[in-house]
Image (cartoon, rainbow, N blue to C red; front, top):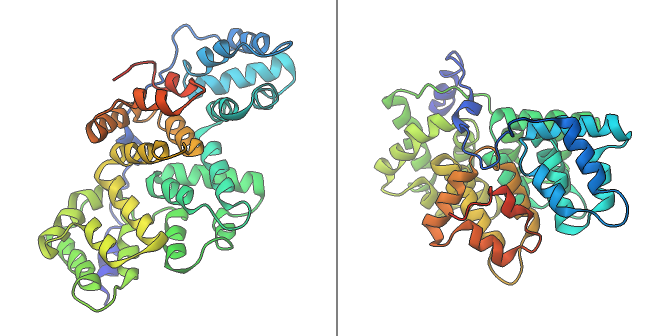
Length: 340
């Protein structure tokens, strides 16, 4: 029998682990005390009334309320005005400012879903968006965005993805998009860990050419806890190289980028996002869409840790980097206006 498959199947009877609990609450945006959604809705309505908008009011409200509170504001706004808050924001604001505000009033699942839709729109797919989202999101988050996709497009996300990507990259992406089946927190025994790590080593370093399927099978079907506590360290003890180094040396293209992203997220999701933020701001122009996506999507999860990792990696505060690269200023408020 296939030792890799045996190892995977041995995990299915174990108790499941809630990956959302592992994320903690290390965000910079917190729920506001003394919250009144109707009052906030009226303030937003007044801020968008007449010629021009009162940008400070929009920023102060939408960056100082939790996502759950913003959804209640949207409901109150709809009741008070008969219009959708998102539609009015799109009609009254422009450019990067509009994009960030619309992201803030979207649910996390809807925002992720719309980013995936954007990645699949037009000629060719924007693979970097697909890689970031499917490598970094939990099972619950992927299921939630898939549910939004089904509701809005009346089609399965996995079915439409098949039209956009191909090759080994598609195999890995489909496994992630279908939600990892082996997401239990129990770590395999030392002997089973070594069997799987040895299989990866033999699929890469010990043979001519690389057996990508072994890497895909393990990295795209194991829980983060299993990968972190076992295979990353076990693989290095067998091969003398880190798993990331082997992937970078043996593979190329989108598959390499996806598998490396998975490994980086297993090691430290905040460090992965800090690196992505740095990449989005370096060079001649800023990748505003990536900047918006990370700042908003991590603002209630781990942006405090992302900020800390950014400082450690680049010897510069994320606040300072945003001040240099970003003109709208609204993302600074997502950092809760602290400069560390």
